[in-house]
Length: 356
Image (cartoon, rainbow, N blue to C red):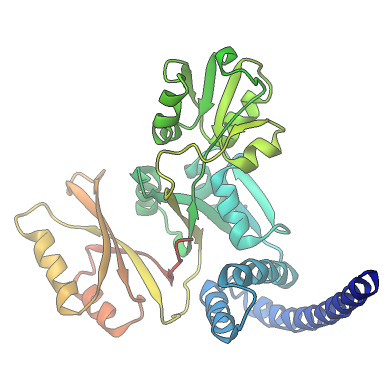
């Protein structure tokens, strides 16, 4: 038994040596790519290229690795590669351990330099002021709908959406107290209380003081310093702040998902599986929206989302946030844009993300 095990371990060591050698070969090529990009200041992050690589590898895969494992391994390889090409900072809605931080790390890896910010607006400002190359913010949740602040800021900013990330949202109940009866206050982000209402009722906690804070990570940070309190937070945030987890997966709906977007200042190339986001500023007159949407239908463009937002501009009652399949450079999309030059603000075209 021991002899067989030792031989298997030696075989693994040999394979690991080969993997290390191949990874270093890959990074040598990556450095050359980085040199070419740096001469023209071309973007280092090319999500459409990364997704194309992942799709190719998944098609070639014969197991036992599954698609999720391939994605996890190669996304980290991509992140290390980007840092070799040109180290760039990523701003996100903080603090450390927030769901947005997790979404950022899922795309930019553990080695990237991260800049936590206090608000969504601060993420936009950090990228606009070139304090960070990329920004990561939430844009919609499967239960609570769109994040209005993000949509409003997209309407004002020249930044573009260059990628999207879907992440399942699971909440934990964490506290220094083992006895629930000793808990006198609960910290969390406002919407998290609503997402965990059933759990709070089932454990006679619905009448305990609920204190909203800017993030679930901040909730864990506060509860870790205060006996008699608790936090509804992510598992990672609880561990980060050494806050004992009493219950996991306490959300009412276990399919809860948040969509995050990556912001930057460049235009993606076509990937063949793109999504485009726009804001439509239509005059307040009967049939304006219908006529606008009919042009998309005539061009055979598939709309995947439409959301109205109150307009700050006095000439408009509402703006419409719209997602559709396709890239801004596609011929049929260009034809529709040409008809509505004054009404459409292009927010970005990017490779579609996949819900996990």
